[in-house]
Length: 307
Image (cartoon, rainbow, N blue to C red; front, top):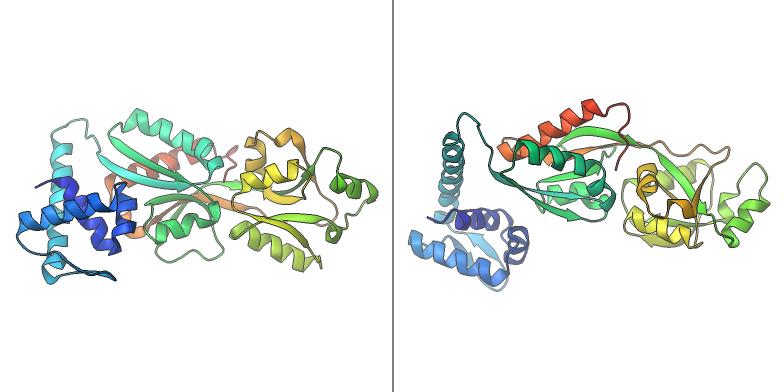
């Protein structure tokens, strides 16, 4: 029996949605449908009942989940045992993170992964860090690099790998923003400045709390997905922004902006780490990445700063 079809079956059984399952499997919906149909023909029973509105597991499909999981687990154990005494680990891990994270901390993890576990396949998606934990909760990816929220969902295991401070930035080039800043004395009138803010997420929450705490009636110029784009907009003179310092440090535009501060203390930073579903930590490939991250955290404990 084709193990890849068993993988496809388990993803569809988990999502009960062909479009979403095909996205997670990195194949087209028609290809997924064809593979499921071929699997059902091989098994001799319908594993799913489907119409134009929904997909549901049949009774036989629910029973087949145990068989598929056991078969794939046995196959992985067999491949590992055949490689003794090296105990090679095989598997796939999908990861979600921001662009900054992909070439800062994630680079170190993958560098070590290639040295220790060459047979683990990585699938990487980058995007807005505000979505990271929800991407794991919704099973889009198995692992994410994320800021630790004030309330961590009960299903999530979180391994801290660093800390990021938050800084306010403004453009360096002459513009209305720099003119206003030059006219302020020792105290910045934040209510007179235009803010570029994240659309959602942890940084947005911290900023709004800071506004309230300091009685700032903020003017929002733009709402942006992703901190990297915020640095770009500030460099163009469109406003000021609060961003994680690691984003600024890794930005190609860092020389075109300046850090600003006054008597109002900036919001506290936050822990950054790996987020996975607790129930997935038994997976050998996922655990291998988890362990590498922990080793690197110890090595870089005095210098690591990331998002």
